[in-house]
Image (cartoon, rainbow, N blue to C red; front, side, top):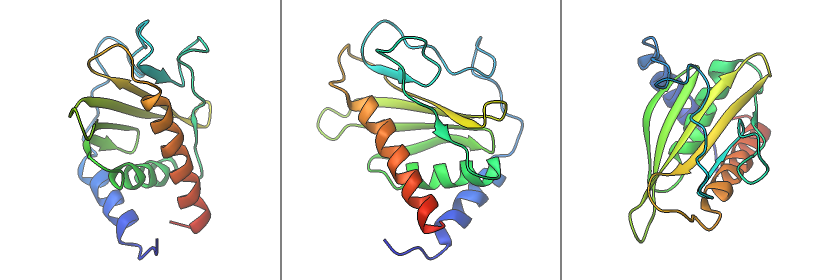
Length: 150
């Protein structure tokens, strides 16, 4: 994929347009929502091995890193960015066949120098590893974007 500079610029513009103060997720402050006991959720803030995934690396300026993340997520199929700013991204992924919606939340954790991430199904119990694969696909695409200088 050849990079023209338009994608990252558009993502930065989206973050600038969404730079109004962010309301923290309800009742959780700046932490991501916890995973329930069902195996259809993964989170870098989950304390247990079943639900835990590693956070995403925070490369350089947090606002630029989040703009790159928005660009990566936006390029994935059947995805909608619900809200984005330099500290937080909330996106929806819709499955191809059943049209189920999964939610991805990402937040900058400046103290840890990472981007915390959570991916979870809204409905159902099993996700057959879809949310874990999604986080790893985001991680891989982000690493590829970093290597190519996007």
